[in-house]
Length: 140
View (tube, rainbow, N blue to C red):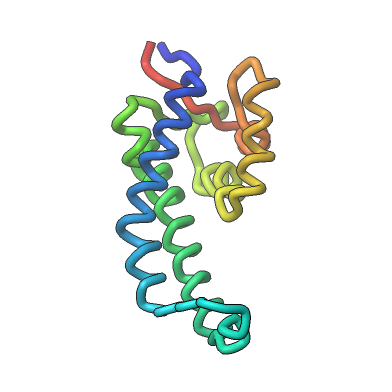
């Protein structure tokens, strides 16, 4: 038997995952860029190609973290800590379901809009969770 995961647990789990990704992926890769902006003219000297490439690599790695862990073990590290996991409303959890439910994690603004769905859902689902027919649950 399962129960829908409380919003506080979901948020805490997300914060743990973001902390992990920031520490292991984002900070080390952005430090390689050596961006020092002290005044407005420094913005014109940025190597936009390198910046775009670095940010793209960070995004792909971060997105892959969510996809791989949720697909393989139905949890991220944050979810594991807070004892919540992913469940399909259909028979088995598919890679396409995981991909759809995590699409908005590519943008903080999209994720915030997506998360509004939790407030209006009996099953505490984000909009993309409804679309992907997945649930975030805990044992109970």
